[in-house]
Length: 125
Image (cartoon, rainbow, N blue to C red; front, side, top):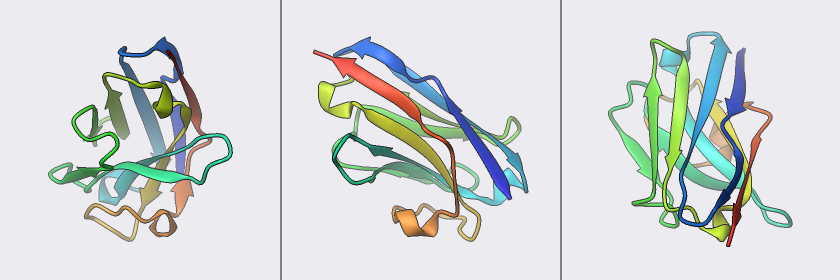
């Protein structure tokens, strides 16, 4: 079991930055590939960014590439999502997820076994 708790969401203006954090507890966090997903009202959950177990490999969706950066600190059992140059279309609930069967990056939601409760990000224009 892995428990995930996101934090850092909020209401910001377009062009501003936020950093989301996801604190993990339970089984060995450092053995899990991790990812961030988001879901806007009326839309399906979509992939945002993923990171391998040691943090050496990352990938992100085209819509956030160059603006969002995923990172992790295995000593703190925490994964981060630094979001810069936020746009109104980034408004969504952001979810952290863990894929314990994978050590490399994964973008498919079905590969993730554990999910946090989500944190709301709202970007005003």
